[in-house]
Image 1 (spheres, rainbow, N blue to C red):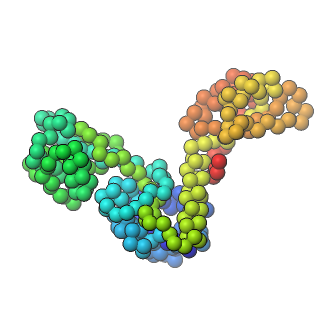
Image 2: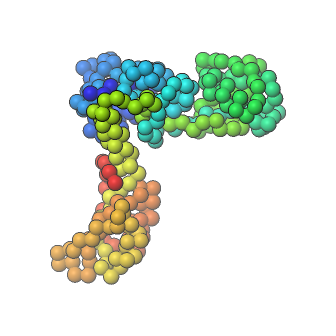
Length: 287
C-alpha cells in the first residue's frame, strides 16, 4: 500500500480530496483531525504542510505526494512530476512598482534588492540571466516591500494579478508556471509492485482529468448527413452509429466531444437536422 502525502489544509486540500474521490479513492479518516487516512482502501494518505511534501517524498517517508510545482522547484530536491493535476495554477513573476523606473529585466541593475519567499528560485533565476542581485528573504506580505524601501523589486506568486495591481505593482517577467502536481522521487522504486501501484494511481487520476474536459453526446441525425456529422463529432475514433428502431432515415450517433466547444457542437448538430440531442458529463475516460 503506497503512502501519499497530501496538503493538510487550504484550497489544495479541497481540490485533492475532490479529485481522489472522483477517481474512486475517497478519503476515509477516523476523524476530521486525523493526520492519516485510507484512500478508498487502496492507498494510505498522510496530511502534512504543502511546503513539506517534497521533503517527505524525497526522503522516502511518502511514496508520492500532491503539491504545487513552485514548492517543488524551491525545495531543490530530486523530484519528478508524474502528472499535472490542472488546478492551483499560478505564475511566479518578477514585479516592480508601477510608478518606478524598472520596466523590464534589462532595467534591473547589479545589486538590485529583490524580496521573495522563494530564495532558491530567485537566486537561480537571476544567476541564469547574469544579473547579480541582493536577496531579501521575507516570510510573507512580499508586495509591501518595494513601498517600504526594503526591496526594489519582488519575486512572488500571482494567479490573476489583482493583488499586484492593488498594491501598485506590475509583472515584468514570468519565472515559473506552477500548478498542483502528483510527484514522486526521481529515483525509481526497487519494488515492481510499488511501481505498478503508482502507475495505476497516475492512470486513475488522469482518466478523471481527461473526463473533465469532455462531454458525451447522443443525438438522432439524418442518415444522409452522416459524413457531415462525423466532422462535427469526430469522437475518439469516430462516432458510434446505431440504427433507430422504426427510425427510417434517422440514425443515432454517440460520441465524446470537447467540453469547451459543446455549445458549437450542439448548434452544428441541430443545423444538420439533429434531434433528441443529449449531453452528459463523463466520470472517467481512458483513451
